[in-house]
Image (cartoon, rainbow, N blue to C red; front, side):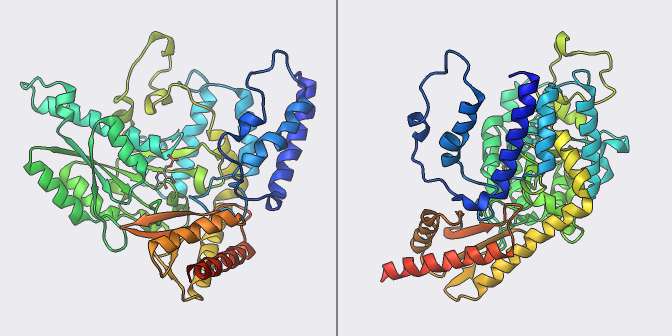
Length: 479
Ligand code: PLP
C-alpha cells in the first residue's frame, strides 16, 4: 500500500468506523458464534502473495463482526465501560503513525514530556495532593500504565524493594538473601478486591491477605489494624495495602481515610485502585470518596474505562518516583543518554521496555471535552443508573443488592441464587442486552453497568423491559 492508496483506504476505513458506531444499535450486542468459528472462515496459513485491499476489507464483515461483542453498543451493560471516543481514536492513528517507542526521554522527547504534563492536568482535575504532581518540584509524578493490574503490581514490587532495602539497613549482620526477607512480607487487600490484586501477590511472591469487609462491602481501618498486629506478633513484616475505590463486584468503597491512618502509623505502602470509579473524582460531588489519598504512596485509575479514552490508558501517580524507578533499575549502555535525570525515563516506571505514545489520546480527549464536558459525561451515566434503579424499585419481585453510587446497579430477584443464575443466562441468550453477574458473600446478583457513550434514558427503559419479559418467562417455567 503506497501513500496514495493509504489516503484512500484510510478515509474508507474512517467512514466504515463512523458507520459502525453510529449504526451499532442495528447489531446484536452479544455474538452467537461458537469457539473456533474463525478457523472455518479463513485459511490455515498466511497468503504467499499479498492480497487486494478489497478482499481484506470485505472480511471485516464476513469474519470479524460476527464474533465481536459490541462493547460500544448502548445495550451493553456488562463488566465496566471500555472508554471510546472519536478524539481518542484519531489520536491513536497519529500515535501509530509516529510509531515511536518512548522508553526514555531521548527515544522521543515529546512522548515523555506530554505524558508528564497531561498527567499533571489530570491530577489537578482530580484535586490530587500536590505531592503527586511532577510540577510540584518534589519527587512525585504520573505515568500511563497499560492496565490497573500492572499499576498494582508495580506498586507492590516497589513496596517490596523498599522494605528489602530497609530490612538490610536495619539488620546488617543477618546477611539474609532477598528471598528469605520477602518470605516474611505480608500484603493486604479486601475480600472485594479485583483478582489482579491477588495475582500481583502471586507474581511478586508476597503473601496477600484478603480481609473481610463491613455490611457495605468496605474495608475498615480496625480490620486492617487487627490483621497487621496479628502478623507482627508472629514475626511477619506487613508491607503493603491495596485499597479499592469502586470494587468490580458492586462498586463499593474502602475507607481510605481509616486505612491510610493505619498505614501511616505502621509504615505500610498504601496503593489505591480506583480503576473504574476514579474518573468520577473529577466531579466535586464524588471527590470526598477519595479523601484519604493523602496517605497513599500510589494511586491509579483507568481513563480507558470511564473517561472516553480508548484502551489502553491507565493513569498512575506516585509521591516518590525514586521508589519506583529504583525498584527495577537496570542501565545498559544502549539505553543511556546525556540528558538522563532531567526528565523521567519511563522505562524505569513500568514492566515492559517499550511504550506507545498514549498521552496523545488523553491530551486530545481532555482538550476536546474539557473538564466540564467530562463532568457532564460522568453525571449523565450516574443519572441513568439511578433511573434504572428506580425502575427496579417499581417491581417488588426484585431487590437492589448494593447502594448505587455511580454507574452500576446491582440487583436480584428475591429468590434463590439458582433462579437468579437462570435469569441472567436467559437474558444473555435472548441477546437484546448483555450483562454479567457477580457474587458477594454467597449472594448471586446481576450487574447492570451503564457503559457505552450512546446509552440513553430509553435504553434504560429498554433494558428493564427486556429483563421483565425474560423474568416472567423464567418464573413461568419454574411453576
Ligand atoms: N481493579 C478494579 C477495581 C477493576 O474494576 C478492574 C477491572 O474492571 C481492574 C482492577 C482491572 O483493570 P485492568 O484491566 O486495567 O487491569
